[in-house]
Image (cartoon, rainbow, N blue to C red; front, side):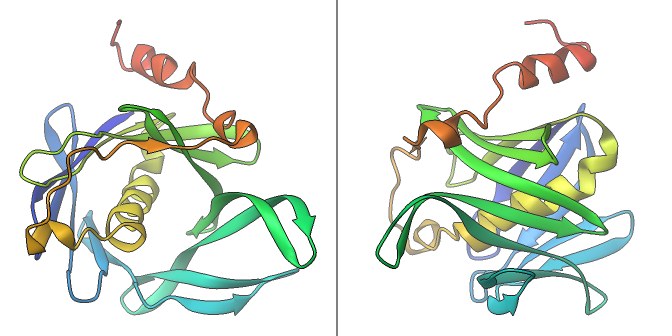
Amino acid sequence: MILEFNQIDRQPNPLFEGKIKGQIVVTGKGTTHFNDGFIDYNGSRYEISSKLHREKFADKTATQVSDILKDGKRVGFIYPDLVAMKKVLFLSFGYDYFNFIFNGNKYTVYEVGLGQNQHYICVYSGNETVAIIHKEDKKHNYCDKYVIYALNETLLLDLSILTLYFDCIRYPNHGEFTGESYVDDSFLTTQKELNEKYDPSFIPCVKRMDGIMD
C-alpha cells in the first residue's frame, strides 16, 4: 500500500487528506490551541490527545503518554522511550524511539534522518519492518507532505493516526500560523544503531508490490 497523506490547509486549523491512487480514503484535522489531532475513517472519528500524562508500565514509568480515543474511550496510546546505550552516574544516553499500541496491535517506531529529503519514520511489528513513513522536506504554503509505504492496507488507519501524532502532537508547528518562515526542514540522526533501523530495500519492495517500477 502507498498512501499519500498530505496537509491541505495550514494553521490555525490544519486539514489532512490520505489518498490511495488519487482516491481519498481517510481525512484528518488538527487544532492549534490544544494540538489535538483527529482522524476520520469509515464513519468513525479517532482523537489523538495532546494531554500528555505519566503512566506506569511493567518495568518503567512513561512521562509523555498520548491517548488515542474513540467515542471518549481509550483504544490506544503512544509514548516516547529511550534505548540506553550507556549510563553515566544517573543519566542514560542512547536514542529515542516510540511505543505505539492501537486496537491490540503493538508497534515500535524509530525516527531516522539521513540528510536532505531522507526523513523516515520506520514502523516495526516485532523484528519486522511493516511500514515506512517518508516526510518530505519541502513545504508549499506551510503544508506538510507524507508518503506512507506499508505491506498491506489493513495498516491504513493505524499509520494515519501515527502520522498525525508526529505532525500535531510531536511537532506542532505554531510558527506556520504566526508567520515565521522555515527554509530547511531536513532531519538528521547520527546514531549508527538508530540509522540501521531504516531498511533501504523496503520502499522499493512496496513500490513493486504496487506495480511501480523505478
